[in-house]
Length: 107
Picture 1 (cartoon, one colour):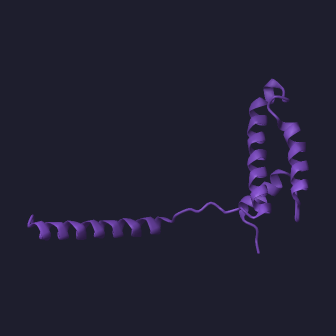
Picture 2 (cartoon, one colour; picture 1 turned 120 degrees about the vertical axis):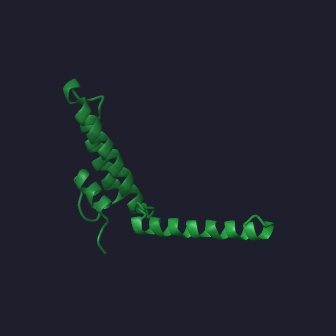
Picture 3 (tube, helix red, strand yellow; picture 1 turned 60 degrees about the vertical axis):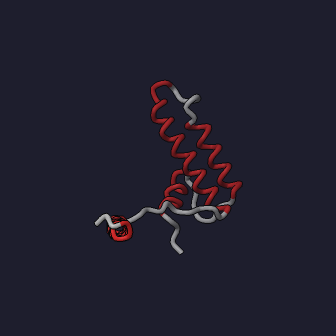
């Protein structure tokens, strides 16, 4: 089974590979957090450190969820499904209007 892209990207961000434990994850996170924490960076590098620190935190959250079994990849609705839904709601709305117009003699 192939790992989702988010998980493999998170592993790469924390410089981890293969099978890891929560302890390995925590150690890697701490190492990078100390290195890239915005309060520990020089003023010139603060924007870079901030961006990297956010990436590290996001990678940690993804991997923690993946390791404890709570990982669910982000669900995206396709454009085709949206068009189908809109068509369905339009048809339903027309049906309801016809029903009420016939029922109350508005038509």
